[in-house]
Length: 288
Image (cartoon, rainbow, N blue to C red):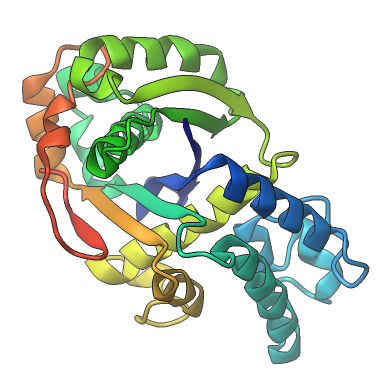
């Protein structure tokens, strides 16, 4: 088994990107990652209950003690926050290039909500990008198992969600039923809280940077690019350690194609994604 920890990161108000993804890890590196992550959290100069990327960015909640005014973070305070962030990224990067593999699926929210104005499309895609993105992320994890061809299955650990978690096991089973080729590579499914699971905190850190990278790469949502049009140093650090593997996004055409190929109220048929081919170190592209 290879563990796949999945979390979501999204922009508010049905704009920008809704991203789902995280990391794939083997057992021994995963154990070491969690051990080091917990030890770093408990350092006297940090001492936080959990690490969450958005809170570190905003200087809020767990990170409020490092700033005087979260709405007006000073250069010195930003340096402190970034220093903490860098230390957690170093744990994620680890001592081996095989420590973790990061991937993510981004939904263009403007396009998604435009398409589901049609009742038929809404019946296929749902009321929000949540299930759409999670199903694609799970199929991409199956593709990773096929790609490495070691005979491993993927064991999912997803962040708990009050609205969606009760239905998650049934959706997962139906996804496997509708996608038999992917199912050959899929294993167990469970949920945990990212406030108590170090690996999910690492997955949150990864997908946060994937979403921000999609902002830059697609170049469509300037109001989300408050810190410039360049890739953030956090993403560059992950990429330089060769951890980032696959980033996909879905826009209007992809949604319309999926509506045409699927029936309302059923998990998506996504087996065709297992026939993808690419040779890039970081694969980036449209789902359509």
